[in-house]
Image (cartoon, rainbow, N blue to C red; front, side, top):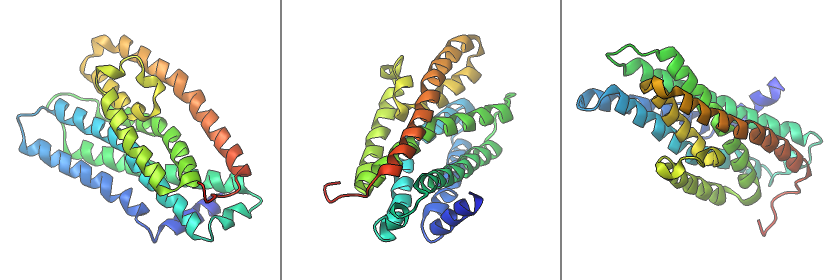
Length: 248
């Protein structure tokens, strides 16, 4: 399994995929921190909250771009014949999925660690716990998006998955408003941004934590089985997939 994952990374070496997982999170973190320094009128809370929510809103589109490129590498290699002819199709699909999640973990760590080190509050903030939970929430809330966009990319190609990513960004931003109250837990595109919002509110308003914890528990009750089911169905589907037809 490790060798297969390493081989997957070697495929990505000649593409923009490694760089987008390093330069994009690092660049956004540095630019946001600099903006916070040069605009003292904005508090640490407002800058940090906006930064985390922007990360959450942007994730669906970034994931769409990443998945489209990862899948198109297979299309370029003999129109998926390498994976279609394999007797271990489930394993190959799972390896590709794991390789993308590993790169996402690196990107999340860079985005949060760099920003957390550069931009700090004058007040006493539990940075390690706060950014640790932020990283866990971002990771847990985006696994289903990787599964969805890999499926769309294999079936319909880059245009469809990127188009879906753009739509998801709009939905995510819309559900950050009051329109999302009570329903965001059932819309995967909204998970990253709304979790970042709730996490920050839990830090800022600890007296209201029971309400936010209730929302998080509802999300967990939806997200955990949905993600597991999505992974299972994806593996089952890919094992029977016959390739992208002209109609697709």
